[in-house]
Image 1 (cartoon, one colour):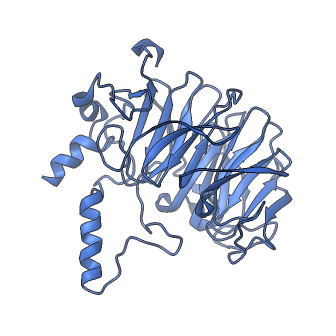
Image 2 (tube, rainbow, N blue to C red; image 1 turned 180 degrees about the vertical axis):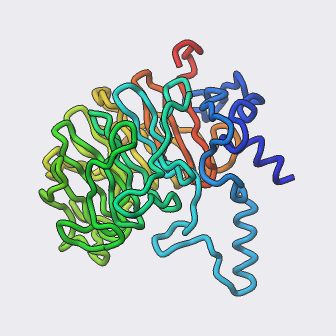
Length: 371
C-alpha cells in the first residue's frame, strides 16, 4: 500500500505526468490563497528524479517510526544537532534566473537540475569532481544564480561554495576551504544561503555552524561580516545584526537584502552594503524567502515550516496577503517546504525535502497559455 501511495503522490519518482493527472484542472477551494496548482509540472525524463529513488516514509509513518524508537529507549534518528533531520532527501532549495529558468538544488544523483517555465528539463549536472571532491548531494544546501547565469552550489557539510559556469561544466570560484570549518575570512562553517548582487558581490549566510552573514567581492575576497562578536557557533543573539541560524536571502529592486534569522523567526533587512535597516516579524518559521528578480511590487514569498505552507507577504510591514498549504503529500501540500521562487509572470514554485517534489502555482484566473 505504501508503494502505491508514494508512486501516485511523490512527484518525480516515476513519472510526473502520471502523478499530476488525477488532479488536472483542479482549483483549490477555501485556503488556496487565490492560486491553483499547474498539473503535469515539471516533466521529468525517464530515469530522472528528485531526492532518493525510493521515497522516504510519509509524515505519519515517519513519526510512528520515531515514536517507536523513543519507546524502546533509542534515539528518534530524525533530529540532528541543528534541529533538523540528519538525512533529509529531496530538494534543498530553488533559484531563478532572468529568463525564468528554475534551478533545483537536488539531494540526488544530479545536484543541479534546470527547468524552463513550461517544466522541461533543460540542463542537469554539478556531479563532477571539483577541487578533488565531488559534491555530496546528501547535504548540499541550496544555491544561487547570478546575472551572467553562473551557478553557485552550497556544499554545506564540506564548508564551501562553488561557482560553476552556466553549463555547469567549469569551476570558476570556490569560497571556503574544502572540509575545513572556521570563522575567519577564508573559512566557512556549514553555510546555508547565498545572494549575488549586480556588481558581483556575494552575500553568504554562514548559519548552521557559525552565526554570521558575510560579504565577498566577485573574486571571493572577504569584505565584511555582520554578527554578534566573531559570529561563531556560540555567538547567537536577538538584536539588530545578530543571528540564531541565518538561513537564506532574498533581494529586492534596490538590492536590499531580506535575510532569514531562522530560529529567531524573523527577517532582518539590510542595504546592499550590508548595513542594517530593520526587521520583519510575523507568525511564521521561515525556511526560504524570495522576491521576484524585478523586485518592484513590494511583495515577498516565504516557505514556512511552521505549518508547511506558502506565504505571500508585504515587504513594507510583513502583513500576510495570501496563504496556502499544510503538511502532506497531496496536491498543494508540503513535507518540509524548503525552497520558493516566483517568476516574471507571477507563478510561484515551491519545493520540499521529504516530499521530494516541486510544485508550480499560478493565480486562479490565469489561463493555461499564460503559465
